[in-house]
Every structure is written in C-alpha cells, then in structure tokens.
Image 1 (cartoon, rainbow, N blue to C red):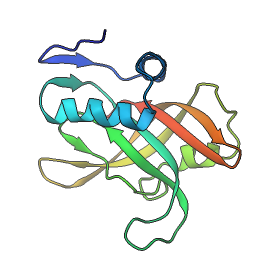
Image 2 (image 1 turned 90 degrees about the horizontal axis):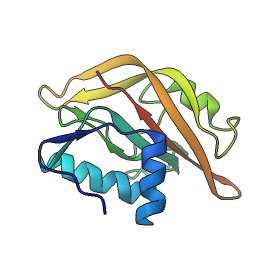
Image 3 (image 1 turned 135 degrees about the vertical axis):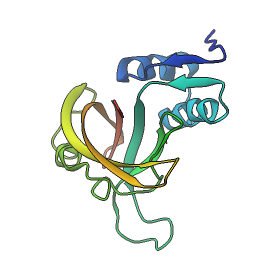
Length: 151
C-alpha cells in the first residue's frame, strides 16, 4: 500500500514511476495526473518534475501532429501546459532522441526547457538534466516518460 502523508515531499524518478505503474496497474498518464492532483491539493509535494509525451495534434486546431506533453507533474510553483509541443518548450535534445533512442531503456540527456512560474505567469527557460525512457505501446507510436529537476 502506498501512503503519502501531508507535507511529505517525494522525488519523481523514472524507476520509481515505473515501479508505481506496475504496482498500481495504471497508465503513466493516470499516475502522473493523480500525483499532480495531490500536489495541487497540498497533500504531497514533489521536489522535481516529470512529464509524459506522445504524438498528438493541437487540441484547438487539430493540426501540427508532433510529440506533445500529455500530462506533467511539477512542484506547485511551476506549470507546464498540456498539449504543448516539445519543440515549443525548447526540449530539442529530447525531440532529437524521439526516433532514435532505444525503447524500454533508461537514458539521460541535457536540454533546455521553458516552464511558467505560477506566481508571475512568466516563462523561465533553464537547462536541465533529463532522465527518460521510451515505450512503444503500438508499432508506430512512441511514448516518453521523463523526470528532471526544475530548480
């Protein structure tokens, strides 16, 4: 049984999220969304960020098929918009790995990322170290799970 007390802080890592995925038998997207709900509700804190990315189209225009953030989990002070293209967030290194990184193997990369501060709603771009893994749920679809610091 997984119990997280009030005011407890956890560090999101690819191995930890993979363990929870298998243990709870839920999708990574659902898992990250539920952890983020706990963060938003103030029941738990996270010390870093994690995101799931998969190919999708713009929710508004139904165009521009590209790898996009499906769901993210961040400390309360940061925000990563869902359905945002990886390229728009400055994640060039992860985008370059999209078609070439081996599936089901954890890797690391350094890339810039643009996030929004919830206090000022201003964009902040920093270079971070990303831990990632790609999954292939269907032959032509790749999904990426990534965890990174967001200091």
